[in-house]
Length: 261
Image 1 (cartoon, rainbow, N blue to C red):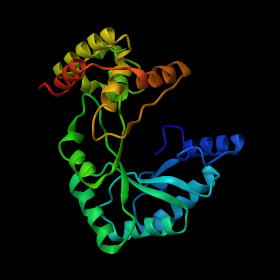
Image 2: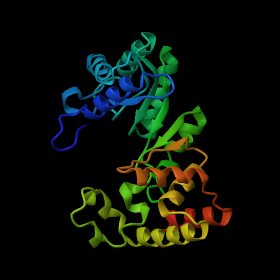
Image 3: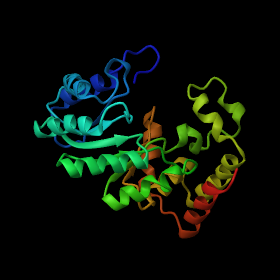
Image 4: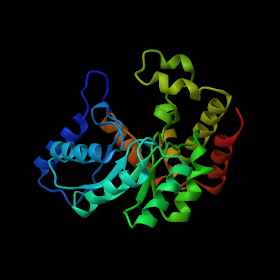
């Protein structure tokens, strides 16, 4: 969608230049989205057709492995959207379809349209999901498991809240993502941080590693999405893959994440 001072599409350009330098394409899974950027907004057939060409050019590739509908677009018939995506799959420009920020009802409707009309379906979904934000579990998770959909959750560390580096809301002053974080500092969030720190100490891990390890233990989740702004943060995130949480630790985290505020 583009950050302040950016026009949008810069991430694709950076990745495209990197792909060109490394000289290999087929050993990575390349994912991008359509529908939220103001200059290519919505999921109409014409917009999807134009947006994918823009993305392919910036990415300097001839195909996208997973192409996500970034936001649901209720103004466009699902058959039109899925038909447009289907043509991209048929042309080899897209391998797999994904849906981000779709509720359970609309996702079921989209899957039904694909089945009824013989169109490619959404195979992957991307919901917000972390120890604090658990709404995915009640409605979307059953749809994903029923239909065998992949799930890659975003905001896995709750915009940095679950790293444990912010102990009180005053610590957010001057932080770029402070607006995202303030809502987490309620009674439930603070109690959750206490449990997260205790489990991290017992597991000899960082709070971020524990929060990601908990997510990776969830049956409906394929993989969490986590961002890094430094190599040190990347090392911390990757360390989550080797954290072994005991059943008692998983139960304590689960209970803390669902306790009433």
